[in-house]
Length: 166
Image 1 (cartoon, rainbow, N blue to C red):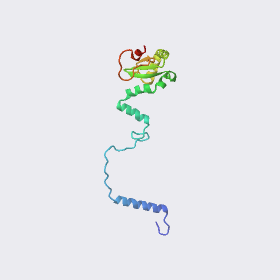
Image 2: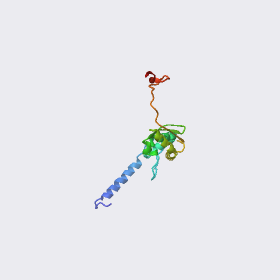
Image 3: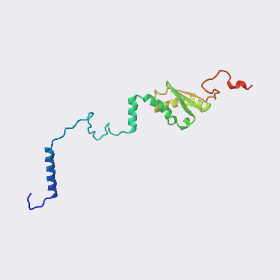
Image 4: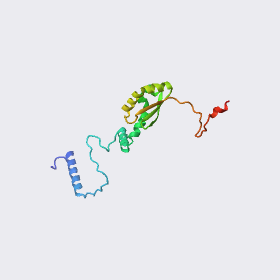
């Protein structure tokens, strides 16, 4: 640069950058302590394992990892009963228990119990399609039960309260 021309801003910036680089190169570098654990690397354009995940994927991974798949299938029979059998049938019956592949369904009347026994193959087909074939293998339909006169955990055999009526 000659002394008769004024310095341009780009020349001033370039000189300051070169001075900063020279000062940085002459300064001793501090030693870096390595923290134990895996080194993070660039995952690329697709999401990596450490990126935020949808909640459904995390729940599915947890169910697989903990081997809860059989329990979640049983729970889905009870939790999604309305969606599996339809709102019309679900409004007249409810699943009670599921033991060893047999689903006990309680109907609101004996007429609905008879109707559900006739619909049992189609209900089993819907259950196999929605939940899986190994969860429910048999369907047992019962009607409503008569009211019980027993009150409490202990009872005495016999006619009960009706024996004092006459």
